[in-house]
Image (cartoon, rainbow, N blue to C red; front, top):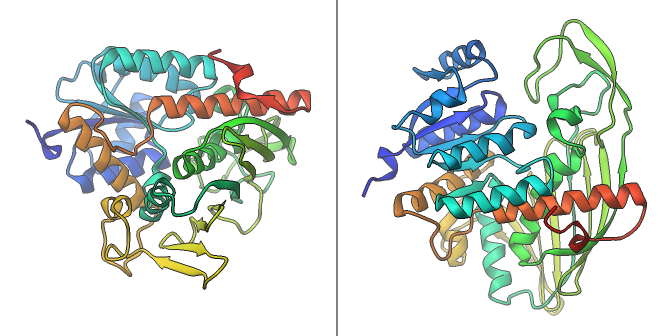
Length: 387
C-alpha cells in the first residue's frame, strides 16, 4: 500500500489559500506535482514563486497526469461545481474549498457523483482541526455538557471594511449571492454542527450591505492584500454582515452573526455552547484555550495539552503543550486525516473531516438564509430540499 509520502497531489488556484494548501502538503510530505492558475501565465509565475517545478496549462492536462491522485480545489466559488465533477469523473480524490458550490442544487449533484465514484471527497473546513475543537466534539459526544440548549457566536473580520478594499468574493458572479455568510459563516455553521452534532431545522436571517459601492482595481488583487493603482466605482450587492437566528433539530436554539467590516477583528470566530450540565466556548484568535463553564464549581480553561485531553483532541494535536497550534497547523492536521484515509482506500470509521454531504448541508443553510432575508420570515431547511 502506498503511503502519504508516495501520494501525488495538484492544487487548482494560486492565490492566498492555494499557497496555504501547498505549504501544508509539503510539510505533510505529499508530493505536490504542480498547480493550475487562472491562466497558464499566472500559474507558471506562481509556481516559480513558491518553488514548484511545474504548472498545468489546463484542467484537462492536470486530469491526465497519472502521478496525481488527489486534487485540491481552491479556485473561486463559481468554479467548484464543474471542477469537482470533472475531478471525480476522472477517478481522482478531491479536497474542495468552501463553500462547496454556488447553490444547493449544485451541491446535491456533487454529493451523488462523489458517492458513485467511491473516491475520498472532502470539503476544506479546516477549523474542525484545531485540536480543542476536536476535544469539544469528543466532550459533547461523551455527554460531558449534557443536552445542548443554546449555541451562540460569530465570525467577524475587517479586511473588507473600506470602500477601497476589493476581492473577487465581492462579485456575486464569482462568489455567489452570499458573501460574509458563504465565505466565513459556513465555517461557523460547519464547526458548531460538528461540535454539537446538531443541524439547523429552520432559521431567520437579515443581510446587510453597508458599502453598496466600492472601488474595484483594474488589475488583479490577491486576498487580504492592499489594492493599488487605477480603480473603477462599481455597485456591490453581496452581504457585508448578517444576523441569523437558528432553531436546531433537537429543540436547541442558536444566534450567530457574520461580518467582514468589523474594524479591528482580523479573524475572530467564536462559539459558545450551553449544555444542561456544563458549557464550553472557543475563540479562533486564542485557539489553544477552551473555556469550560460550571454551575456548582469553578470555571476552567483547558490549555491544549495532550496529557489532559480526550482521544479526539489528542488525535488532532501535533505540537507539544505551550507551542501554539494555529491556522497553518489546522490545514496540516486536516490534510493528515484526509490523506490517511486516501492511503487506506476510503473514509474510515471515526474520521472527522467534512464530507460533501456536510458541504451540501451548508449550501442548504445558505439557500435558506437567502430566502429568509428576501421574504423576511422563518424558513425551514426542508423547504429548500434537494434543489
